Length: 313
Length: 303
Ligand SMILES: Nc1ncnc2c1ncn2[C@@H]1O[C@H](COP(=O)(O)OP(=O)(O)OP(=O)(O)O)[C@@H](O)[C@H]1O
Ligand SMILES: [Mg+2]
Image 1 (tube, helix red, strand yellow):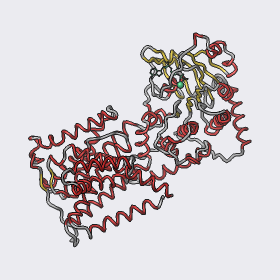
Image 2 (cartoon, chains in turn purple, cyan; image 1 turned 180 degrees about the vertical axis):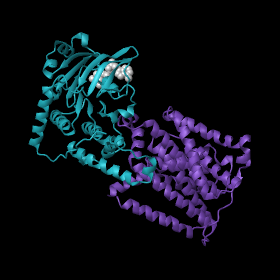
Image 3 (cartoon, helix red, strand yellow; image 1 turned 45 degrees about the vertical axis):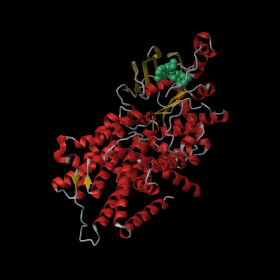
Image 4 (tube, chains in turn red, brown; image 1 turned 30 degrees about the vertical axis):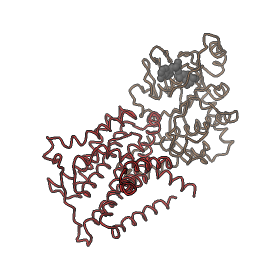
């Protein structure tokens, strides 16, 4: 198991990279969005799955990341890759600030408060005062980045490989984080805050920092998403986005690093699949599939796979 | 940080009994109160008062626990034992009075710092991290011995590996001592209650406490397990050089293992002395033999 898992991950990454040379441009765009959503869900998994702070508003951090990148690229001509660290810092700071009041709100109250944040996001983005930066209702359009170093690939291939590369790095960082001292503390707080304090864990510090890191991951996903789509507008970041990320988290498996990958696949492809099954009522198909998933895999895809592997071992 | 020897549990059984017996004699010689001129006691509970609304859970309780002592804390249900534990571990703040460790007041120490000062505890109803394995629960108990932060861990810097290795040594020793190796990778939620209590003890011990608070460790144990627990406590005290404050309803166990016993009733101390003295104290006998005055509805435990 110890060697198998990293090996499987390496093979998976190589296979994913190889797809850049076989898939159609449209499929590549979809795959790029799988990575983007996976990273966004990974951020949510850190705070909700590992740390037990339920957020129904992570779409807001995604939106902030997307807008930071869009504003820097279109207004200040910053190269796309250089916008990522800025977006990371901005989202981490905002995440930390939202993590502070979150300390006083347990469980469902926190869920509701973050939900309110998600509801308010599109309105804030449309706000007249910010229109100079945000482009108001119209939003902002971005240029598709060209492949660097004279690489003989097209822009879609490059965009996919770039996004995949950033995603892999972020998954490795998150994996390291949760398997050591920090991850244990995050999970201890989720399982029993009082006992966590009695074992010397500074609960307030860990909760706010986890919120910051989580917002940072989801914010970077937003940046990557903005670059991939080439366009940001308030109505792309409605409350539905937050709910979709939450759905991806639960479907993939909440307290797992692999889970968000499955969640990303699920939320990127299911709408299309549903559309193909029934043009008339794709929403109903989506709902039925979701219910079936939860019924068959109550601990998400990652949880189900884990159980299968353990049984095989 | 205090240096502590983590002797490996390879010694022959006979040697253990010798060790424990001699240290027991030593500490019972200084019992119940440390001889004058010695350093101040490890733990001082001084006039602690705790109220919950109208209920006076502790009405001014004072006693000391010396270094290396096992001190039993007894009393009928609802007499304030767990409340006192919660004061010592910073979960409740006394309304009046204070708790001192090595002469230092714990009044202004935040909860997560208590363990840094050297106090580890278990909970009456077991407060484990349920979804985590035995090993992970124990490693969480070593949290305060580490210093690496988010960035170092995300990058898995050498310091992170070093910390993990040093915790590993203590983990191994305790897995053997508390017979937890078999279940090391089992989620604690699925273990029997008695085993969970040992996991809690291991989680507290890995943090290298000077004072270990045990809240009813014998609850739910059978006869032979209680005997085993007695040996275990002696061994822990000798090997890790710590004091134990033991809350327990199992009188035989308390009287056998303790150097000193404190008895509470309705939040007041009614006796304090050697096991013999306390056992024969008329007030204690009255409290336990259930004169109507002392009759109290059994209280569900808290925390
Ligand atoms: N959080 C709380 N809120 C209100 N009352 C409390 C609280 N904690 C304890 N009490 C009350 O304080 C008194 C002492 O309770 P405590 O749990 O300390 O007793 P105990 O000696 O540990 O009893 P047991 O042997 O049943 O565990 C009881 O009357 C109890 O109802
Ligand atoms: Mg109690």
